[in-house]
Image 1 (tube, protein in one colour):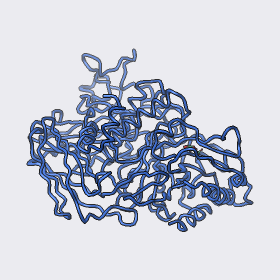
Image 2 (tube, rainbow, N blue to C red):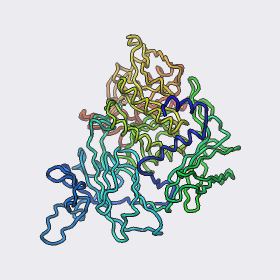
Image 3 (cartoon, rainbow, N blue to C red):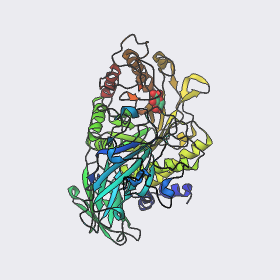
Image 4 (cartoon, rainbow, N blue to C red):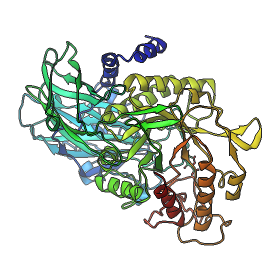
Length: 615
Ligand code: GCU
């Protein structure tokens, strides 16, 4: 079906149809069995690991993959073999190898792996704790950067590409009653045709960076669901459920919202799907000042899952962003997924509490989670704290727009993100890309991603962090001339006046010619400062320079009549291999308002004052 026809059907507001279409979100290769909505057993802890820069555990000396051999060599690391007798030659041994903590990146756990990019093998032994032999068992990963090949008891479960989205494998048939050997090959090599591509401004943390869980389900289980307020008719809740298993068709499903005294009984179709639309009144809408969450329970005769869901609408009208039909100004900050406590990739509830706690302290009602999907703890905490969220996939700078596999990779990451977070009230914006150069191939690539997003979830806003340019060649008048701005719901762009573009003084001389009748959102501005370095406001890297830059940028941007929000770059200093100025950067991007030691810089208070002064 062509997207034009698609859009026209959507525009006639046929909720059931968009529900059916967005079911395709569940038709991915492997279902994601989410440990946040059902019981699970964590496999967190110390795993054995082997660093394998030459991928000696994967290929023979002819670079032929062991897993493609008829008779798999026991020198393949995924066989987790031991010499059968004193003469057998096996040149690796997980038991004798060092250990590393999962979840976590290897770069900040092992000094010798700080700069390492390549393959590391992980091995975890576990006993099966299956309660009912009729049940099924799944292995779920929150994420592994970048490519993961997963094996159980020497058998390949599958692979996953993309370092920031969740994936699962079914292991029922491979599970042993005794000890099971789980081996994961993780390769974080940067690839030209990858997503992201080879150059980024963040640290390429490698490893099993998020939680790993074992999940036991009935033979037919609730694979996924979506539930939210109907965008154009907030008097109705709409949703869908997808069953997985032999009894998926013709099964009864009850959707229960106890606090609303609401129960809806559904029957699945031959594909195990069912959608629903039910009227609601006296619903407390989720908002930043009242982040009300309702317990929602899905029951079948065999299975039950529970989630905490907020109900709200998010739309745009002319130059306004409307939350529950009321204009909202997005007082935001950009955040990288780095733990200010431990250093390295953030992954825990405590990390999320630290980062979002600082955002709240700054006076924020919004965060931009850059430049890739962050862990699920962040968005679930944002749901309960009442913080609105922008999520994006790492289509960053110049990727291979003409490469079909690159597009499929980006589309897959987008689908996995939407599948994971579609029920999060806090998430209001899906962003397709950051600072990408305009071209026909790029426009086609991003437009296809946007249309895919709208087909999966037409209830949220689409965006991208675009770049500004001079209006008709006049450097003192700036504008956004980007074809993709026609596709997005809001007009978001990054600008660095006062840092990459002149000194802060320049800001007062700049005017903006916004040609699109859309809400304007500044997805990045900012400048670097070494915490504790003070001087006059024109001395780069001083806190005073950064403070002055913020003062002047806030003044300049406030002159844009249709300004409806911003997420300055960035909450906390973060690691980047592109930032090596000694004694100032030393491997850190210093544009944070807070240092990596958690110390606030002067500009933190400049932005806080502005946000506290804004409605
Ligand atoms: C860019 C980019 C960020 C980067 C920032 C910077 O705009 O989007 O990823 O870190 O600028 O230069 O500090």
